[in-house]
Length: 295
Ligand SMILES: C[S@@+](CC[C@H](N)C(=O)[O-])C[C@H]1O[C@@H](n2cnc3c(N)ncnc32)[C@H](O)[C@@H]1O
Image (cartoon, rainbow, N blue to C red):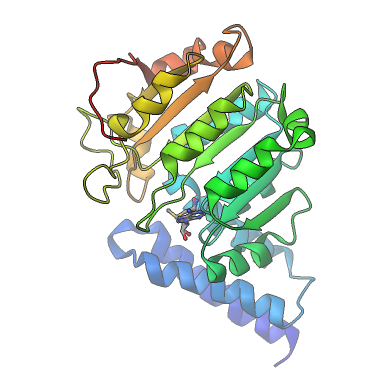
């Protein structure tokens, strides 16, 4: 098959996939995701390093659509962090098919993107998919041990401190849930940063979905408070935008928790937390020692 024909066939497949993704009533998420990965694989295996602009932009569009569950407020938060507060690094735990990390790597050329994935096949796919972005890196391993060695490395710590790193914690699905340990490692590093925990329970707003893997393994305030309580330099926020009409664009709405870590309480992270945008969309949660949790 000639490259031109292959490009045409890929274009059609992508269009069909995008149509599906665009019409929530016909979403077959798994098929759409695998179609996208298949297309990316095809382009790589046919050494089509020079894709037509149309196809390249359509592939990006697919990523843009899928990233962060299409949560426009979360995307705006990252825009603000990068453009207004000077974030220079984003660390994602749990790459999966690299939907969010491709969106980030493509959109913010000056942001360093590091994504950590445990499952070897997802790691391979994410690595290939992100290989065309110079600002990105995918690391294989369990997020907690990778984060531990990264944050112990003084060169790495120096390279991210005062650059308001964003930690997007999205590594779950299996028996071991690393979220609490990830937060502990980040807070112990004393780096001023913003932590976003995905799939988080938002009490009183059932519209936000969250992950629950059984007793003691629900992604919620009870899980993180014991860690937060041990470190005095952070504030916890949950979304208040459940009724926002933009949410209708999401394929399914997921809760999240934002942890603002600012040792001096006067840096960029604290400024973000007092900004109009942040106050309009997130509520501060009082961290209370009275929460009983077995950890
Ligand atoms: C919800 S998906 C991530 C989705 C991705 N962040 C996105 O926005 O498209 C969860 C991913 O975390 C990975 N994962 C689960 N436990 C992990 C761990 N301990 N370390 C690293 N990755 C892990 C899973 O294999 C899966 O790919």
